[in-house]
Length: 346
Image (tube, rainbow, N blue to C red; front, side, top):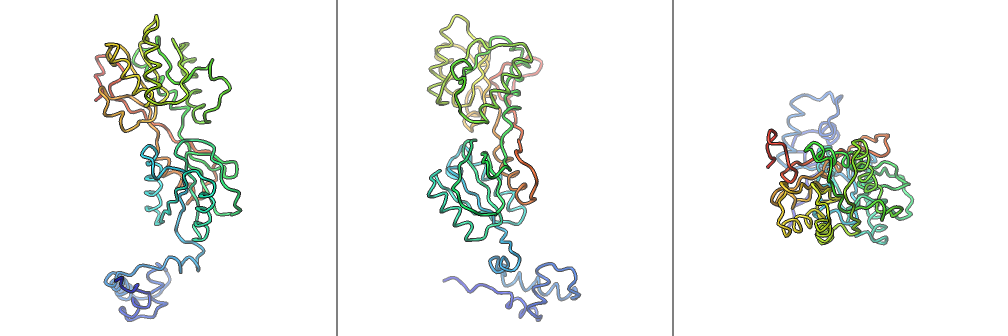
């Protein structure tokens, strides 16, 4: 059976003080005028009894519950994006807040229920998150609780935390140029000619824009561009086989995500070629499987944990910002050829 909850009155009784005196001490009031001995007795009594403050009761007095609602489509149950919630929880805990996690599967009815449940519990703020960066459509529920979008945008809530895909695209191209691969680069997963006017997401558009800007600055052009709508291994495999059957074998492949690169690895091995000696590869996302390929895949990572932390910081500090872009880290492994003097990354 569960034991009775220890109350503030129990602590005061053990310490030999009034309830109001014990409350002032435990709440850190600087003007209590109570002795050091009284402070010591109250804190000792609280520790001995295992006292925990009644957050709900405190919320009625302060209008703060120190609770944040994390409402997402599939973040909590998807390995790929779980870093978003890991970072958010860490930031909330360090600020003395509790995170209420509500998963909706992207279903409007469940989203409405989740937001209602959070409002019923008087949360101090919302983090609305998406597994994949996109515009997130939320139910038309009227509330004035602060909110921040995470890996998502919404016209109603302009404060948003997103990956810096523009910088990430530049970083991927720069990695190939630094290896002396300015010529002979094939783009895997997007074709400007075939996909002009088609919409994937704003962040994908930024990734492509960063790639093309870096190529243009160096006066370079892709030897080929492969449009692949589903960025999955089979698409990368089939497209790479086609590229390798062409008249001009590329010196490098720039894949729009790691899953396309996984398929490219298979096609290159089947062709009897080696990575990176014959073909270098760089991609995006830093999927956990990228480290287990042989050779390890060099990739521009999605900074999910840093994004999660930043969303909570913006919310709790009530920062007057709109879109915040978090830098995407370059994770160097061994899929890009390096000059002998620089060695080969593990």
